[in-house]
Length: 503
Image (cartoon, rainbow, N blue to C red; front, side):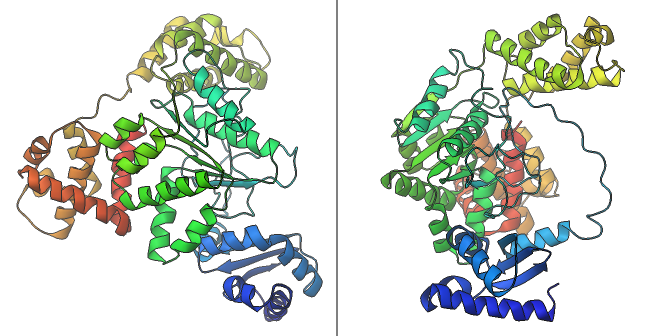
């Protein structure tokens, strides 16, 4: 906690800010500044919202450091955080959170990482490379959105050099290259099923753009970040700040856009942002699971779908055997360099033949093989240890177990069962006549999820809860509104979509 002396120095600091930047700028940006921490060359300031924190950091960071150094003493790091992010950091630094942690498992860098989403981490990466030639930072497990003082959290293993290319994805790779060269379309939309390399391409494009244009802002958004920040902006009445921040970017990248279906307000904000950035000559790169026409059929607004269709639309096809084998060989080479253990070629051939659905499925199997080899005591440094430690029969058994977990097509029964569990109710309650709010909201959630996740007609959805199709239509509209305005309901809808969309 800041001491009384710290607070006196902070008051002097704010007075100096007014003198340096003028009353108008001071009243707009610095009036609400508070002091959260000061000491050992580090100063943390706070503002009411993360958006204002980001705007202040981007526009005035260097000047603020100069003022502090002049009026209060030397400072190596001065950061500005929204009060919500500040509370999260303080909880993370509490004595309980600082207890000795278990050793982190070693992660093998994937040469073609198609997923790349940090578990439980924030999903927004905002980067401004002030020092060209600085190598990309490793992902930060607890990175907070809209905090310019944090390092970029793009996945350093997802580079263009490590993106294996053949006829199934060559056009998408070329589209990204043209964007980076400044000769591509203002808006590029890459689509394909999960595990085909879309996230890899977006991360690689972001890092390459920063390497070439060190002073630019690159903004990488996913479903989680858009929902969190747009909802918070409307609740805190800071929509103008959010829009101002988003429009300050030079390159916008949006991943998994199909997950925004049913979120009308968020879609409207994104559509307007893309339009403004294109009008300003900026670049926009979007990834999704479906072509624009099908996005519109599943709950993405027609206007946003048409916006994407008006750009350069490129698909990534299912990886063929040749591509899967190349990915397997590169991953095995990384594993050998790190552990000294070789995975036999016949095992790589088998994995590449059987893991047909996606690169992500293949990577999961390779990780399982690596863990099994290490668990069975392959001695480090023996190049033939891998083939000696796992028999062909053992590899086939592991492969069969791994592939047994493939997700089947989503059924309306699956959606109903998971929705009921998510809301802590029974099927009888949701399908019954009760009108209690938790039950009614569970019905709304089921109707929205069933409409967006399955091809079941309205009458079929209604039959599950003993209602007619007009009631289902009403529930879908009510759920879309609740998803934007009620945080608890929104979290539950998100959990349902996550269960069936991110497998």
